[in-house]
Image (tube, rainbow, N blue to C red; front, side):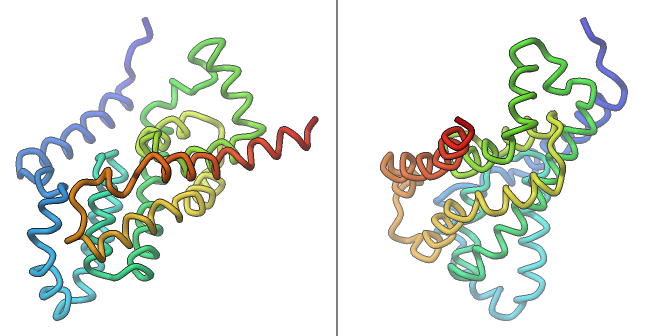
Length: 223
């Protein structure tokens, strides 16, 4: 059995500490649809007089939570719709989510450097070789599909040979449809009963099909 290095252990302890702080302060309870509805008017009033501070705080929170793989991106995106509106909110979330994803990508590459995908077995070795040639296409497909959690994509891609810049710009583009969907919903959060109202199976299948399309085209061109 491979021993866990001090670098890996220290990085995991740091992430665990951040999660513990979030739980200890009950911050995780704020990432619910009910919380968005309860605080929307207070946030709008505060934003009206402290727009710069609110925007910077929002960006910082989004980046940190994404970097530590906290699963609350959908709710945070709703907050953006409440505060900034559909267009500005989408732009802010896209940049914040991209920077946070890069942070998680770097964490995975640093903390788990001895556990690269290609070294985890024969099947994963084939997977790694496939990513070397078609990684951008698969990343784009995964970003568009709401089925695969984004934090898992960030961590797994960090274990591959993909370049940081490639990961960043493809993630940015791939997250546009889903981000706009959630941010725009935040502008009408009072009409939403559950998050499943946003991601019906028709929407999920449409986004997944959109992501698969470039992969299919690439395979057809190769053959």
